[in-house]
Amino acid sequence: MAKKQKSFRPKARKPRGFTDRFGTEILAEQVMFAKIQKVYAMYGFDPLETPAFEFTDALGKFLPDVDRPGQGVFSLQDDDEQWMSLRYDLTAPLARFVAENYDALPKPFRRYQVGRVWRNEKPGPGRFREFTQVDADIVGAPAPFADAEICMMFADAVEAAGVPRGDYVVRVSDRKTVNGMLEVAGLAGDDAADQRLGVLRAMDKLDRLGEAGVRQLLGKGRKDDSGDYTDGVNLSDGQADVVMAFMAATKDSNAATCAALRNIVGKSNTGLEGVTTLERMAETLAALSYDASRVQIDLSIVRGLEYYTGPVFEADFTFEVEDDKGRPIQFGSIGGGGRYDDLVKRFKGVEVPAVGVSIGVSRLIAALQTRTGATLIERGPVVVLALDKDQTPEYQKMAAELRAAGIRAEAYIGGANFGKQIKYADKRRAPVAIIQGEDERAKGEVTIKDLVLGETLSAEITDNKEWREDQPAQFAVPRDKLVEAVKQVLAR
Image 1 (cartoon, rainbow, N blue to C red):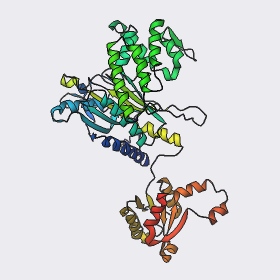
Image 2 (image 1 turned 60 degrees about the vertical axis):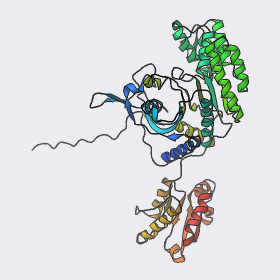
Image 3 (image 1 turned 30 degrees about the vertical axis):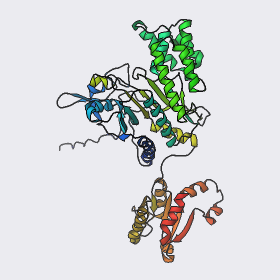
Image 4 (image 1 turned 90 degrees about the vertical axis):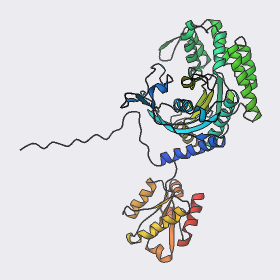
């Protein structure tokens, strides 16, 4: 007798660097998206959607892993043998869209976009191969006024998302001022390209290593606490002095920073052009009450300088948070952006000025939850319990009345007992449970169970007798007052 072959059953698993998301986590993110998009729309930006796939050659050299050009993306070959890649950001598709529709678009062109992006990189803690970006860009407007407006909108969006003023700062620098500083330091030629890259990498470590550590990296090198040695850039003392003075030029006011910067890079025409841009930005920001406490010119900012052509900026949290063991938690930047005047040029052959910003919503939500100690996850629906099967139409009618009043609600249809239905409501993070058994029905009433208040009180009341006798989180109302009572509970 032939042996029966076993049917193949694939193992339920997901690829590394990708994650499943469900329910309230997505709803909380959507609420955050809506808050940010509302700010973008108020500034006159329109939404845009682009395909997940772009032709690989359209993505260009601006890949996430700059040491592996042409890699870092997920690619496949179409049936016509053309290579396509999943987009790694929302900016490269924007450049393609603008070039393809250039004559029909209003200039400046303002667009915002919320979309998933994919990066074929090694995953790690907090580092995913798929995530969502929230971008806004102005194409067709030169510096400095478009850049100042993006910075103001960036600050407004962060505040609208729930970060109080004073708990963040948008930091601004300029690619041209950095180039001017490098020229003054004698690092302008092609033979100094490696040193320039080393200087930028050292500057980017200022927050972590401090001035002394950066100074060592600019010189012979640095040995860390573990004994590992990092080779330095081998600048002379005079060259290192210029770099350190540049980073130390950040003052309490933007005007003072610009004045100090002008003294440092004044011998470079490129540097002076960058200073002038920052001065005009500072004047605009000050006139609209965005002082250095909200948008600060900070010359320690080094952000993808091979990508950007002018002002660059990022927003950082200014508050400190510790984990359960008292160790500081580093959230990194909320997001950032800058000016990239060369990106559309790849398609058009002429320079098209552009500036934009991208906000990291996942990091924003995580930081706010840690800061406040409260969850930002949205509550689930009001759940109408179904204690008697023959009353199911009535329970569904209650849920329909709540929905008609704009309240998210559902009637339980699982056929479980009371205890399991309450557990279901808890798992759904329901704010309220509606109960109507025989006793309530005979009186023409329903019982409102405030699950949020009950959760709070359960942590405070330790006496079982007190809990049974005093039920402030549960009360009865006439059946025709159901919607009004639920609204009152949700309002608090």
